[in-house]
Image (tube, rainbow, N blue to C red):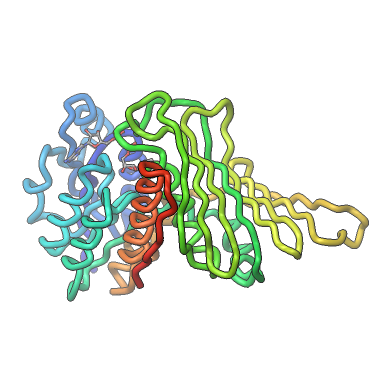
Length: 321
Ligand SMILES: NC(=O)c1ccc[n+]([C@@H]2O[C@H](COP(=O)([O-])OP(=O)(O)OC[C@H]3O[C@@H](n4cnc5c(N)ncnc54)[C@H](O)[C@@H]3O)[C@@H](O)[C@H]2O)c1
């Protein structure tokens, strides 16, 4: 079997880790090239991967690759993904798929009739907790309320985009992925504290059947929190995504008389799992684990949130199939 020839585009903060995951799949993937424009990062890529070609433009290696992993800044995703798809390459693009709805619609058109894989890096889907709780969350009876925190002190990263594109997109995708009630309306407020972009956002998603989700994202918080809580008539469930724990308070009490149960779940290497899925989809000619429709819908919810932030009004959601 011929191996899948892979290039990684972008050797920045996350690109380094993607390169390790390509290396970890030597049985199916041949690591052909790293594409990086910034001289210090190029030098770091050469030092860490002496047997891999390091070039400045993907066009230099297009004829020698079957697949590309896009880990460049968000503003570059649309052009790169479009070019790679039009060139017949399989693509694993980090989240977000692109910067706005119009770009997502163009990519949908470009994808029509193509059988190559396009996978989007919505890595938060790969917590083991979701496998354990999947059926329970999907089967929750209405009404229920979801509360999500994804806040951290300022680290100076991803300031080219706002917290909605950088952080909330994970949670907007999780809401669509984990629950059976689709978003109908978005109302958001926010603050620009350290950058020209939104550094904090509080997002209210009205879901079907009188269900609601409240998402708080910030890059200017006093401590780091990453959790998802669901409250329904059956009780409360909290997944601490940072401490890898599930906490549950049923409507009544547990047989031993306690009111709250806490259970750890194993931490997993999400990026490794995503790479496994990517190569499997290519080899088996199967669908991507997180494909274009999911990526485009997440971008749509980001767009709705940004419009609501800018105008201070609720915005209707129109998801695509
Ligand atoms: N899934 C996640 O949880 C997660 C986490 C972090 C970052 N990301 C995503 O990964 C992407 C990259 O983030 P980062 O933190 O690594 O950014 P970064 O700025 O640290 O790295 C980006 C790199 O891409 C290079 N680059 C820019 N344009 C290029 C081009 N046209 N061709 C090749 N290289 C180019 C830059 O020089 C830089 O080295 C972003 O889209 C971000 O949203 C996802």
